[in-house]
Figure 1 (cartoon, helix red, strand yellow):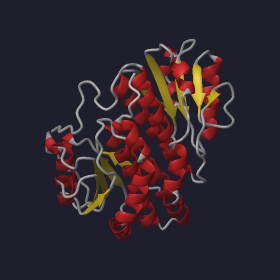
Figure 2 (tube, one colour):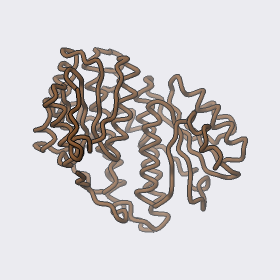
Figure 3 (tube, one colour):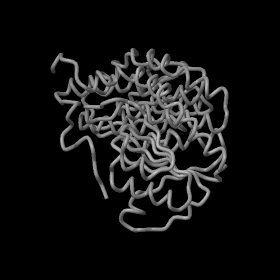
Figure 4 (cartoon, rainbow, N blue to C red):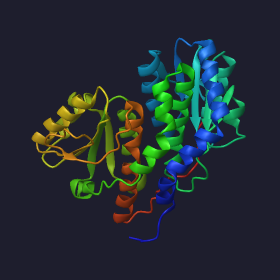
Length: 343
């Protein structure tokens, strides 16, 4: 295992600074996108994304639904790029997320949403770019250059941008404060130590990552990063959904990582992790009242949405170290490339 700091580790450490840069440098664009949603008052929204960006979109789906009561659906980009389907999106809101800003299928779906009459917002780390040109309200997430193949800064900044747009749209003062304070909380979160997971996972070749609500989106991102950086089979489930079948695989010493935020689902996630630990699972949980699960440290931000987002930073730190310990290079995962141009 190399002792030289990887690009991935450096980029994880840069997340608090990148968040502050986004909130300052893209403020005008964030406010304009929020004002456009307020003016059009969409009855529903859609998201367009793949990979880590799709996990960011899932987070924003929960955030928008919980805050506004407007339903949010994920559109398959192939609807436009392959099938040429005409979507009835007049008066809707659309959020497309692409780090590179040039994946052909994401661009095609964003362009189709714009032509259909939706208020289209693009969250991208690249301006100018095709995704920006295809959308009515492009927002530069300002994560800065991301050299490691596995996305970290761009994932977090995409969510922060979406939360800032949501706060501007709804004029939610509590969310506005929480977003403004995020760089400070992220700076604390990036220092947290989750090395207890090393022994918890041990030699297992599979594990579950569980969450509910916005934390399910964090669990989805965590499961992907296990696969990307170390080839470890990890599956993300709702902590409730895991009881509908997948629990059958939870045998003695099966690793389970539970991601609980300080929100209305915390008690539910805690109870389910406690039950799994009682069945012999090696369970870990980000909650004070963790029952039989082993506790992992977390940052309490004072807002349920930003609480959930801050969980990804200590995980990123852990999975980068886990990858190196297993003899992998987290900067260059096998068979992956930085920009995936699907059609």
